[in-house]
Length: 167
Image 1 (cartoon, rainbow, N blue to C red):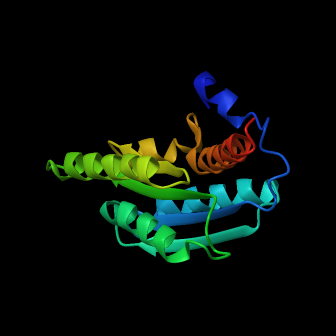
Image 2 (tube, rainbow, N blue to C red):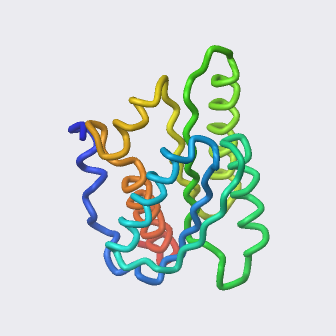
């Protein structure tokens, strides 16, 4: 893992969040990589005893923002309403500009959700040039991005709770 990411794994402030609710929205596309992101995320959530999780699968990365928004809208005011949403996908550069369009759209879509929804939407989309770069982010030299996304979600839930308490 790079030295820049070590502080992210510091769990200060995310203890005692067993009642947190997290939804994981992930893609079928590049499923070998994405399923590993989800598994790492679930492992980290379980480590912090967060068991109130749901999962939704969508065809590709372009559909992630829509599914995140619809999940929020359809669970608002119910016990399934999440404290955070984690979006996972993997876009690997090909020979056409399609990569650029998808990456830009997904990034902007997740950004808009973070500005519109009252809960954080964690960006767990790998945008890589090749499959090896993706594997390097599944526990290789760049850490495990699924685990990091879970910790980020928990830190953001803790922040939201602190803000609501006026801390």
